[in-house]
View 1 (cartoon, rainbow, N blue to C red):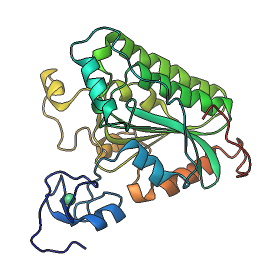
View 2: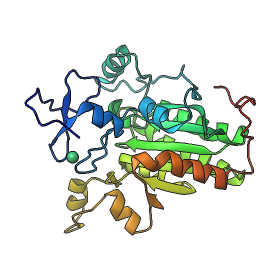
View 3: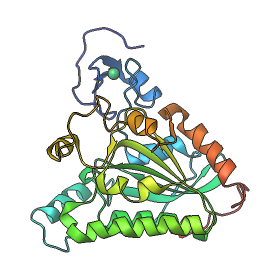
Length: 288
Ligand SMILES: [Zn+2]
């Protein structure tokens, strides 16, 4: 439990920030930072699931030390000469944490090999440009080639507008890769995290065999303002939440972050039992 003493209150939830207390971005209550981390950055008061990085997601979900990152050499280029895009890419890469908005590779989940991808909202809103689409496609193809289930964690504002039509083409490419999984009997599980929107929702995210979502994740195509402009009229209070799309049949199950590893493991064992061995001595396939 948080200690209710006067301390420096940080307005931004950031595990690396100095200070012992953080403020929930939703209910604004103060959380003891150690409790916040122990609770996987979920508010103990309002259950708000704060956004986490792709690497943290992978670390918390898969077997310790089992992740082998792939396609590290891929990075976006400003093909269309979009104003400010190259400078933005350079600025983000200087931080050295991410080459683009998705991290992919192979890992194990309770011993079972899986092909994984996790988007990262901190890199241009997790947007899907050419590199993001290529890495997602390769992750799905790696699952087919090495006969292992694919798990993709989605978080994105949609297609990357700075790459124009090249970005929109990724919608078709990634969806075709999902179809190759289906044709080869390889299960693909998508997890909608906050937010899963627009071009990503309208492509590889929504055509998974099983779709899970974190509580209250924003899930939709056009944003609320655009929907109103389109004459949708009055929208329900829970419009475009994981709970709303679950109630309307788009999501199979809402799963709290603390239960995701167990749920995914059960799905991988059930749907992927006919695939690669759980033998830990056996190397995971692919180019990871
Ligand atoms: Zn809260």
